[in-house]
Amino acid sequence: AQSVTQLDSHVSVSEGTPVLLRCNYSSSYSPSLFWYVQHPNKGLQLLLKYTSAATLVKGINGFEAEFKKSETSFHLTKPSAHMSDAAEYFCVVSDYGGSQGNLIFGKGTKLSVKP
Amino acid sequence: DSGVTQTPKHLITATGQRVTLRCSPRSGDLSVYWYQQSLDQGLQFLIQYYNGEERAKGNILERFSAQQFPDLHSELNLSSLELGDSALYFCASSVGERGPLSTDTQYFGPGTRLTVL
Image (cartoon, rainbow over all chains, first blue to last red):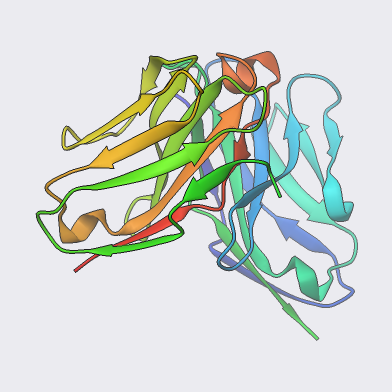
């Protein structure tokens, strides 16, 4: 079965400094991996996805993530944080196990950005 | 705006009651997924429909049921409600049957916040 672990429940950075949100996954197959963002009182928005093409994936709003099979990681980064990046971020793996394509979510990492 | 709509936005009801949540997928999407986001369990998959047929089941309680209609909108029915059912319920849609396996992206609606008192 697939699973995903987000290593930090809360990350705090200053505006203009780099962001690193860590995610490790477990999968018996070549996984599809995603990062979604949830702003307060809003729905989930797809930031980026990895589906076995390039290992460095560029997403919206300057975010990118690198798939590292040897480390089973898919960490999310951004060179310079903006106040509007404050939100909760979910690392997600698609479930090949017994289902047709539902998503398995990590517990989420809340990103705070200080001025 | 993802193109997925959910109604109502908020729902407050009492224990033992029954409610229906509605979801309209993006134009052209045939798959609808339901997810529950609660403080205890985080975000978890409930059920998937593709073109009117149930495709996959996750951690959906027997008190909950769903269906997808010929116009592709979907309804999630929650009955005999308990305090622990209070959560944010998301609907997502994608083009294909197999969601991310076919490089489909799942697009999420804004959610329905259910409060059971």
